[in-house]
Length: 248
Image (tube, rainbow, N blue to C red; front, side):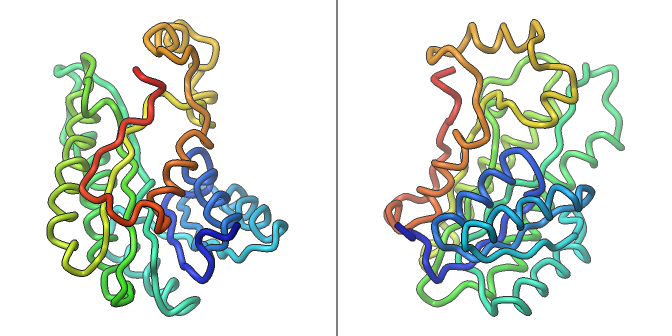
């Protein structure tokens, strides 16, 4: 069933992990997908090829969405390719954990410029491309905003800002029939999780021990609820922060 037939979606940070899984999911359900990436062209090309192999439509666009110029280029490419946007998945993000004695202005801006400012700039730039009938914006947040551990002041603070922005934007954009929600994800087995040496680690075992469902997440565990929020099936849901974390 093509739940997103004739829809156009932008997914930021879509070359791997949650973003890649979400882009493939949206493409499989009929959306034409703009696959944004910054560093991993090979990963973005794989996502595009996967969508196209299933009969879908997708294009990769390299842009740094932590900057105004990068956001402007991404949205201009979406306009050139499709003329409009119906779905925006703000997935691009970075994280890092450090104690207060290790906090620096550089690290603060690295996380907040992408996680918060980049999200706001992308929403602002995309707004003129949304049709009068509205659309859906899904922000990928984190449970670290709800239950911040020690040494997460910057990471948790940035995601808490995403949650507040989600609720504020939902009220601001509701009259335009644009819904805005966030998914607060728990620990997910992504490429970064594996390359960071966390797979099979004591950290993973501890995360599992805190999770009633007895496992950490997989990218598709996030892509499915993102699909729901992107579709008309969630047409009366906005301003919500939904935990997707196995009950943790």
